[in-house]
Length: 123
Image (cartoon, rainbow, N blue to C red; front, side, top):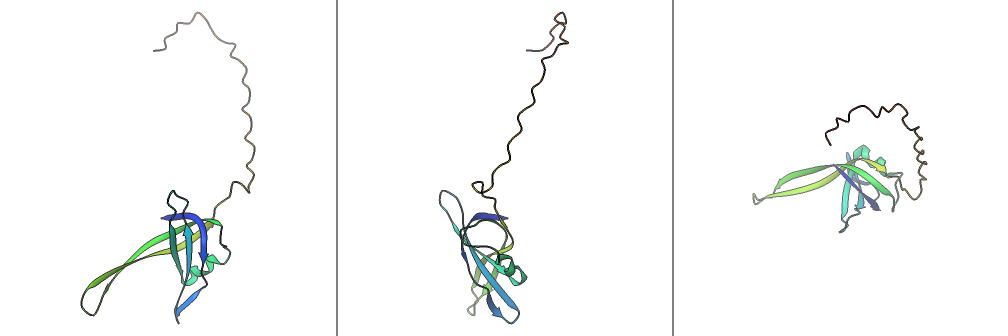
């Protein structure tokens, strides 16, 4: 799955435990009702965010994750997370000039028409 939009927040890396680290990114979608989507990058994927800044248009490849937790009373609770695994800058048309489209080549009119051939077209 993918999320596209403008970077709103790039949080610093958090060392959760001796063997686990994460970094959060918030992307604001470009829709009628924009959504602020928080995406977690974990472990070696944290470094992917080093070259990105607030305001840049990006496409983030994500995986949806879900887990179950049972509290001490035996009640099950469910949690979702969005994990990023790739991020790409989107080309901004205003900055990148487009290459000119070559003009169609002119064709010479057909000269081998035989007016006496029957027209057998169905229309």
